[in-house]
Image 1 (cartoon, one colour):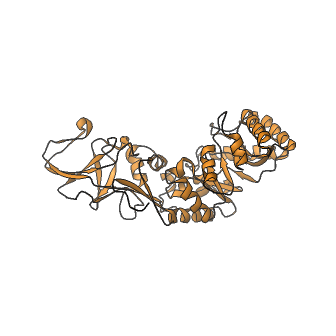
Image 2 (spheres, one colour):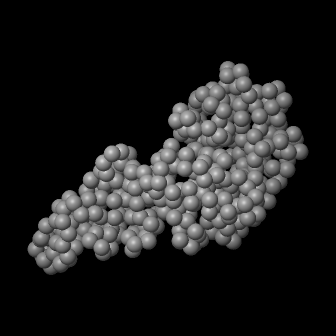
Image 3 (cartoon, one colour):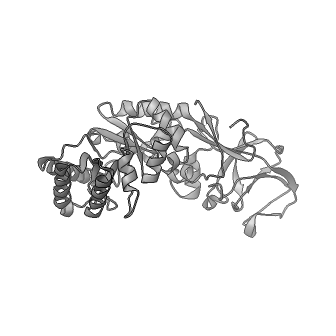
Length: 378
């Protein structure tokens, strides 16, 4: 992009992504690192962030959907790429031909990937997912013997290669939660069974970002890091980004669109949930929930304008919101920082998460396609 956008834009610091990957690798020195770039790299841009992560030593990339993984391949990105959220009729053959690692959680998926491997005339790389207690995707212990047996048989016939066995924590962001030890024990049992039956996985993995940071015994061969790659703390209970040695990569900025003086008793935005108490100056910020600004943060969301942190006045609308400047004055065109690293006193994604009663994952991921990304350090 030759010119910086003027309405609203997200600066993405790729040097921060690289630094975070290096920091996370230091936290798991005996394991490889998968940088998860699903959901357009949590809103940061999958292609540039994938490349930056690989440059910093991430040996694997991960996506939720096969379409996300295929887009990486279409951009010329090599190396191991895993995708795990499949539905019947998905692009199985394209995934096999692109040499993707395909997660398999049940017999129907194994059947479809075997057919795709026959059509592609090459073995499919598959990773068997164990449901060790999260209760979402993955094969339950009761069905594990059937799935492992069928997968080992498919490997013997040459249609698949079992490249991994993996699982996912439910409560790794709550250190000491009793489910963590139970899931680790279940994973070890299910892994041991798969290996006893003939699986020889290249990688065994269960650790997400929180487990990478706090649970060394969960690191196995590979850790999967998502939000932490982008420098945002995966849970306030674990510490701030700074305390965890991470640097937020996204700074969301906008230009003030209008400044005006209004009298006491002036209603602001839909529903007049905010009414001015005295004569004051209002600034219009041209970003709204269509851009990813959470409407749930109406009246609470923090924004740095004119060197001070202020709160959204009234409701966040589709394309804009208002802040009350009091007696201060700024000009149209001045910069507003909606969130950033926090290093200069500006709000962070976690501050917005608290204001919206949600998690920081949602704040960065929901920044929409209408918001241009401006890449630094790349």
